[in-house]
Length: 182
Image (tube, rainbow, N blue to C red; front, side, top):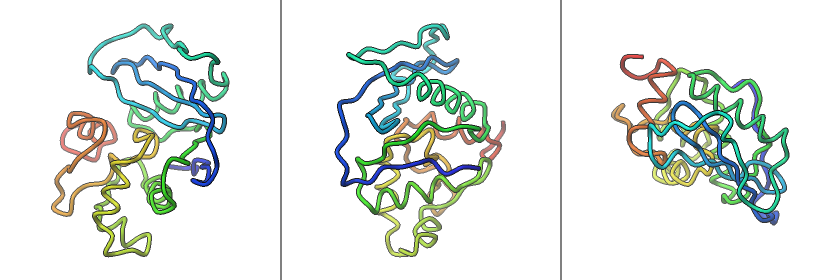
């Protein structure tokens, strides 16, 4: 990514979340915002459900700030098109431990179209024996589309797991040109 997303520290208290649906050609993503930024981004529950672009809506008491929602929609659209997001909403990754946040920052530095192994990430962060912990941090990533854990592969070059579901990781990598046929 050209720009590192802003993050919050795990020690800071987050406020109640405000939820919005982000309609895409690939289904509706659910974005949840704290008072500090995008705190969670969930993949569509049912792949292939098409919802009109006008169906972006909020379902809790207060909507997220319009600028954050616009930035999130733009970033989601860019990633789904296989491009690096031009703009990020502020990210509130305070749900993670300091180690998880460190891993998520490392993931954010993997360029579009490239992949790394869990072991490479562990070495990059100076914790070469923490390969499984890196995998666990990837699985705990609250915004897996924007903090690109889909770009992390198993040591044997196989896909490994992905919190978005088994169909999403190869789909995203193909769109970025780093897995099989585009």
